[in-house]
Image (cartoon, rainbow, N blue to C red; front, side):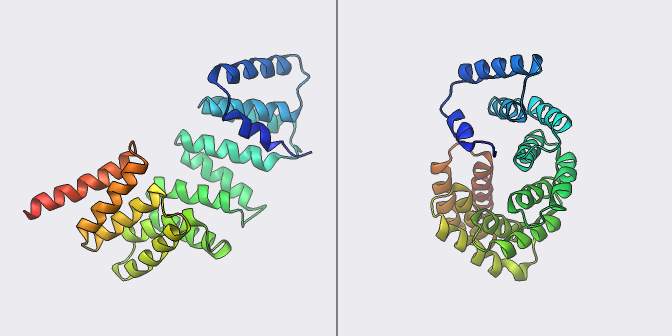
Length: 230
């Protein structure tokens, strides 16, 4: 039996109080030694939704220890990896990802997590290589089209700027109102000197995601540059 993903979807509609109540119920089941692997997985997911990532990881480790043949092991490990990333435990996440990729080297979710970890560790060339691999597997994966374009714009050779533009335009064609993609295009336009147009795209991105610190910083960079020019 595969883990019921409807349970995960339903969590979005639960209050914190309901999630906590479910956690207490599951912990009681565990204490009474009558828990199934699904109960451990369910508990980890509920901890994750409360942003208690340490307990998410601990619960999945307990699941692996008690039920190493759990049928939905792959999904549980991905949850653990994402929790590690939220805790900025990038080396631990990379180790876990590389172990899983030995089993399924074309898992684009794992590869995306790996690229993210490398980017956060400022290993931009490694991140670019991983996104290139993802796009070989899934050419229209918009998130990787965006990330590849962003990294090429900021850290790639100048002769690859045209390639960066092609990729970010492909991402925007798939999802024209994604603030991250609009932000990347704004960064690209600023890089090639089209500052007024870059500002338009960044303002649109900020309207869609007004609390995004990265977009705000990119806008500030343009305003600072324009002040220096004047």
